[in-house]
Length: 229
Length: 246
Image (cartoon, rainbow over all chains, first blue to last red; front, side, top):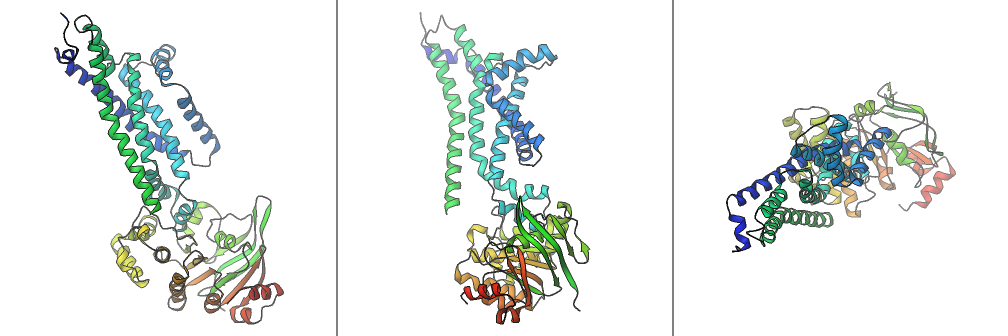
């Protein structure tokens, strides 16, 4: 006899396994974001310097990660690099690396944009009290840029979390991959299980991403209020 | 003869092909107040900005306190601690409180003791009537108050020389007097050496020892203030004074 679809979620260790997969997803996204944000701030600062070759190289880096679809990047790192360059990493670490490089690229553009929108006068006022370049960035430009860039950064984080759904393509045991396994294993006994498993996964992603995007909106609104008031 | 603190010799400045400062020669004595006057676009701001390295110049030399300045950014970072500058657009750092704006230079650049610097900052704030605003953020201040803090921020570095670049030009008229009084006070009480770019003719007349009159990037005359305002040497300066309503 067919079981009701929802019970598939609670059969055996299914629910724990799904939570475990979610943890893999969140961990990859979080580590990639932390590394990527730090690297991105550094690259973003470098992109505001006058050195032309440096700017061109960093621009090419950004465009590469922006233009090439994330799936292709994952395949490139997962299938092609190991063969061509003997560069081997487990799938989850490799995914973290790819995502971190991608975040760094996007973040460098956000940081650069925020830095160049700090008014020129601020830079001159800083110089006029004798600040050197490091001090100027550290105390004046970066703190002001951060308040401009936080909403865009949070939006980037939600994009990264959503894009982790591609990880099943390189066999990482993320929440979707595990969901897929559960569905396949229970297909005969729970034909409607697919609906419930994906429903739960939807709920997981929503619970993580929605608060972030709500927070971004709220910060942006507050910033505008402050700028106008 | 009074000791000269600043000499500018044969200074030439171009923006790409445009020649904006022509063979500028002048000096400033210690304790002297010089005002730079001239019509808009005459190069006053450009000139004053050359004096602390915010604008590059292509030829000529600037000598400050007996030393010829090698115009590298690193040198300027040293010299800017000695030459304070206040701008038209009172640019406090919006991410820092009033006190942190003031302390940034003394503690991070000059490595002064934070406690002593803070005490001095409070004294300076009291002097401009803002002792209650040490922990306020710039957005909570009026334009005139911000400009007073900007002056304090420059003074906190113990400069030997101050540059004021049209510091009242974007203030409400009722705020102007307060700022001018502070500058006057610096001249009278501290005998601060300064160059003041202004459009406030009454103020210029009142504060200046000497006037440098600029037009189209040329210095047309350098005259003691009394003489400039009563009987300028050049026809252009006379026309300029006639055109100003004061």
